[in-house]
Image (tube, rainbow, N blue to C red; front, side, top):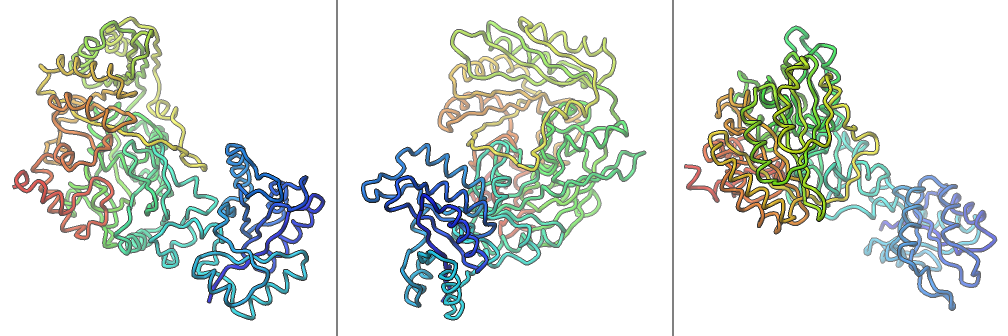
Length: 622
């Protein structure tokens, strides 16, 4: 028989200090909870003020308060919901992980006995007994100890924290190697790990391994919970948002952010999955080297490097994953593996484009090409005809030399305001004349209303993005996105696509419509050399919106122009997107490897390649 025992205190206009002393005594006595009840006959007494005093005088005991108490002797409870919400938020900041605001979580009784304990244990309620003195608290604690009615199944966390646990997770079964660093919904640090850059979440448990063996322990724990979502996270930036969830498990590799130059002459560098590309670029700058890595320095290495990496240097270097020479990972069964072109070549192939399905990367080795200063440009033009302007952009960028990568961005039109097209990107050259020559055709697409062109180190461009920091990401959004790839082999359709895209944008379903330039060195790698197969792509196209149905209706006319998709920018989980991403032959190969390396489909939260995929596309995969 196990139950949590606490005390109940009535608000008293003259006794907030006394209440704090009593709460402190209850904490010293090992009790779980102090419930603060509204005053019966003291209209000047404020239970919220008393809660603040109690919070200041205690460190571990949970504090219970009813934010909406019923009317007491003609005195109405606090009537304004917004005021209550702010009061709860403020008190939670004082006692993170210790506040309980659900009165159904405790039962007030005049005395402690076995019958009350059995009832509380069965209903997961705490038993609280009203007290007025320290002597009564000591007597209550003694009774709880002598009768065995005390403690809880997880006494390492306050009662309030345990009450916030998600159903279906064996919290008491968390491996000892992970217990100290694991974060639960009721822990003070939970807000720092619950969300990602693009999406709010509330996972039931975040596991943060520190060694390869602990990664294996985390995977084994996740395998015991096949009914739950299970996501992998490096720095938590991804647009797709699959590195958080609700009530599931997260394996967070954010602490694996080491960067080590292995061979300066060759540019061989070892990088942990939790490092951000901002950090990597700064570490490589003294060596005169850089690895192309998307367009935002706050993105984590692990998610981008295993999916593709379309950035400002892609046309001159290739995709980010083309720079990988080795991946160290832990397989779903806990086996550590080092995959290279010579060792485990099939796994090395799969990790470069579909890595989230095959294991947890613990380190990457990259070859970083030499790079001096670059031309960094941010331009904005006003255009009369968006369709015509987009068509011009597609042709200008497609015909540009490999050193030039300019992205285009626009969004939902605003009534009465001009249509603005933003260009931003890089010329991988340190000659000012060359830089201006490359940029001039883009500036002529419309009326130039803003420009900034500088000669700067690549690391300074990525440095403008903030790292997540100790506070983590704090998003509460639910982003929807669609992705597609335009093939250079269909450049004769660019004009038609541009007009269709302009119509889609005018419809208002997207607030963010982006072209990322591809081509160049990306096409130097054979299509079957990596799981990322679309080596003929000239552009990656992405649209963000707030409503799936509106996005789908507007996006549908564009699909016919596109060959493939980039899964990192896609939230549509339809099996068809896997064929778009990998092609029928590539998907068949990935599915076969999935059966070998992850037969239980443990890594299924990121466009899973499990049995259902093979069955759905049986004809295509033959």
